[in-house]
Length: 125
Image 1 (cartoon, one colour):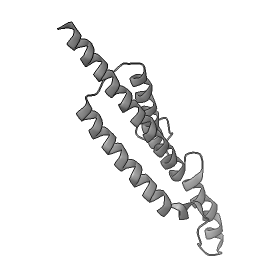
Image 2 (image 1 turned 180 degrees about the vertical axis):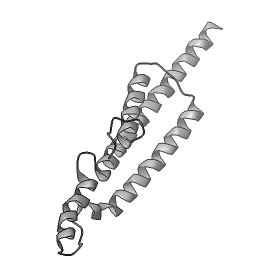
Image 3 (image 1 turned 90 degrees about the horizontal axis):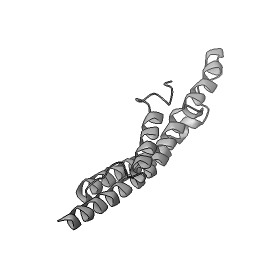
């Protein structure tokens, strides 16, 4: 499984969303109302997809019924581990779901930054 710190993994996406939140909170970028609303809608849709699919994927956290052969007994814990260990699919999906909230906060902060910049620019004219 990929290291969660690698940019292409779900863990990397989660780290990027946290960095975006911090950057927006520090005032490093701004987003217009229109752009911000589009991003917020995309985040809501992602969150809904994750919520819907986490319930459907719950069976992956259970030991699979593969039979009682030596091969099956060897594979059972491995299959379950791939879904639930520290870098497991379900673990990463839950982390991603949490990070969507960070991204939404970042977008809201960036929208506030945009309004502040816009008002400041208007006052100079």
